[in-house]
Amino acid sequence: MQIRLMLVTVFLSLVVSQTQAQHGVKLRGSDGWGLGSRYEQYFNKYNQQTFTGKIAAIDTLAPFREMSYGVQIVIKKDNQVHTVHLGPGWYIIYQDMGLKVGNDVEVRGCETSIEGKKVVMASYVKLSKGILRLRDEEGIPYWCAWRRE
Image 1 (cartoon, rainbow, N blue to C red):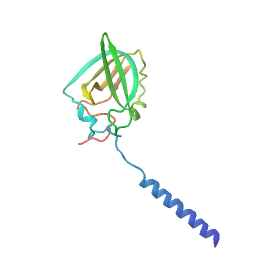
Image 2 (image 1 turned 90 degrees about the vertical axis):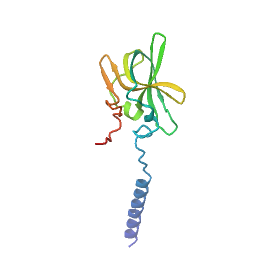
Image 3 (image 1 turned 90 degrees about the horizontal axis):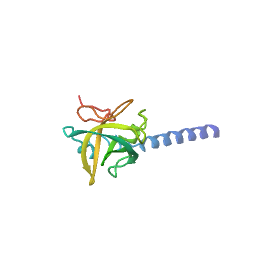
Image 4 (image 1 turned 120 degrees about the horizontal axis):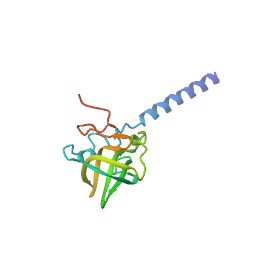
């Protein structure tokens, strides 16, 4: 009888802890990088330009407080310096592109000002060995899998 009671107690504690774990999960979407986010409102698909240069730095960023970290590169050509936002870190780290400081790149994107800093929100980054596509023709990020039909 005591063994049966102990087994029931263990089973119920497992069920309760599993239920609590499931309720503790937050589905935060794209961690601030989604289509309806404040960040995405800065992208203008009609105001895109092409920038070229060498990668001078690769770093992380968080454009706004509520966002998870992202990846940015700094490109230099002559006296021009551009900070280029690629996208969320959880997306960029899984792209097999081999970005390195010193690489020649071509970046297509929208130049804008976020929190008083001039940045380029990239649509693609072209290296000698390939192209990293970050947004489609409509400016929708590829890390946003949810699309309206």
